[in-house]
Image (cartoon, rainbow, N blue to C red; front, side, top):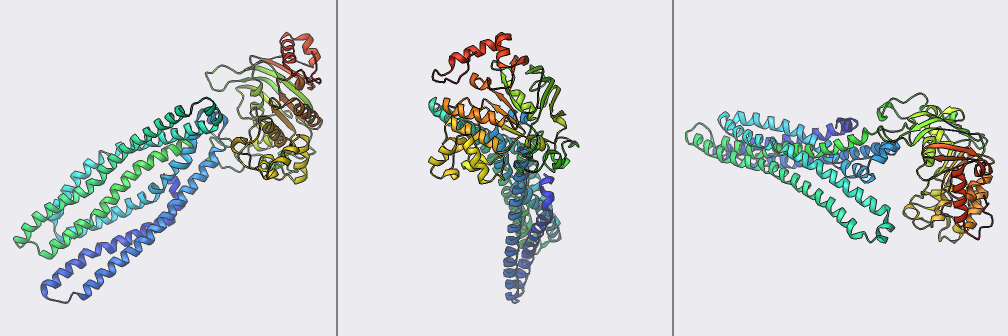
Length: 605
């Protein structure tokens, strides 16, 4: 928790000082009241005392208001800093961490959990400090009035405080479970909105609603439980003061009757007793807020302990481990000429990249079956290489290992003869254009999607890539052209249009290595034929690796890697593999039979 407080120590200290000064002015009020009673008893003028009392009230209120503003502003700054730091870290998480965690739960840690820092890092802290100091000062003043009455007061307060302490762990447990349930709500909603068409087509609205309601009810139950114990803790303060008041009134009245205590002192003591409600309440509130906030801080800390990839200029404190020299490589190692894709973007004149897999073994987690069993192949710079094989053969995993979304369990992956683990990560990825299997399109405008990997691309470059990917007609019919909002995950575009946008985005980066994972699976025959020409043209200037199931795409490749059950079965040209590998011959025949009858360009095995 101190890590969140440390950068804001000065304004928190100022807010605490102002709150303390406000408390001191309040502490002087019972003394002024005692003087007022004494003057009334002696028949003296009370005008000056009344003016002093009024001034103390006004001054104390003003100072406390300024202090409250300073603390509120600082609290918002704490939340902002926590969110910024957490988002920057979450966006650098390693892929295995993301795959093990619900996205909605991560979002809840950024939103609702960080919100709880607002109270615990400022109000709770300052209340604990000022409440403690004010409590001590009040008790000292009460001791000056009468030690016997102080003993009565402390006896009652300590008894009730001890019982209050017993409920604090219950508040902590209930608050943590409530926050976890809020994270579950976010996870269920994220799942539903991420597959909205599927939910509707499956008639699953009611079931998904029930799932959200169950998570919401769980959050409600734990929240009510926490509120119940917080209410017990809060009302204990009032109970302690009321019981103390009755005890002090009885014992004090007897002492006044016996002449052991002046009436004015009893009045002042009772005022101090009521004034005691403030600091004691602040201490109890600070304790309960701490229990709630500690649960949120624990969840934020869990997210901050997740393993991350190295970021540009990131210090060791934000990494899962020390940043290696290779990961901290300079921009010059990756090339900075073109300016696309960030600081480490490749230069247009850079040669195509070569790729080598050397006895690669990979499993997603220790204890799970291996996905790759000693995969080896070599791709020279330039040209097009296709990966084919049955589902689950490990084709798409090849791309994940090249991009270092996952790390190999054994063997090596080399790009330009250099182990990808020795590349600066930003430099490696800046050299690669990658089109995912589901052709991801982000919420925003079409232009924003096109330049996502090449933010400095000019209009002429965008026009050129639109023509190459046959998107010019699409842009022409959109209401706002390139500035048209494409919807959540490109919902306003067809599947084929999303694929072409994803390919255009990759080409605009001018990569040295282009990875296409099922990049033409949703295109019609006409657009697929045009895009085949685009890919073939790109293969003359860059290295293209493509995972494909369409024979018309595969036969364009200079070499074909046939994979089965995590192994490389054969490597060769289409003609060589048809003649020499039964699995490829079967796949080719099946795909030829499934090809559209009108596609005269589909080659025959």
